[in-house]
Image (tube, rainbow, N blue to C red):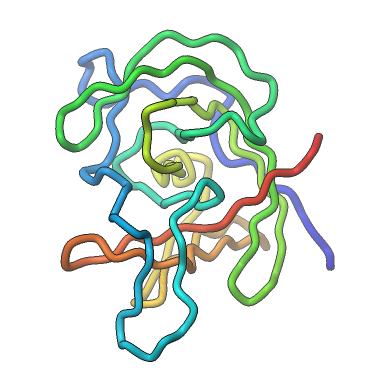
Length: 178
């Protein structure tokens, strides 16, 4: 299996877009209960929302994680993020996530996320689509998920999670030792 690494993010901090001093997170709490779905009742394997899943979030101004696993080069950080319900959550560290994306079809691709904020009270990991687009990725999608692409590298957000009457899509990133 040939693997190529792509870095998503910027080396500089992304500031919040509304100048209130906090980074902004999309309008969902990440925890949909059991994290499973079976949209058509066919008994297919269900995706599970666990600490290896990173939801693609167009409203997040930075990548954010609920765990220190796989986070390297961490530095103390003081700040907050505001989630969709208006609550502020504390950011305590910032670092680099190094991992391997495992696509549902078995394909594996290396990934590096820079300036990842550690938010201990967060219920899931968020991959900032804003950061990806700012880094030169393009995005396309359909009912089966969406893809971000830069050059020859494509990441398919192929894990689907029910959210109200809609869906959230994520990718599975397993930790990689550096």
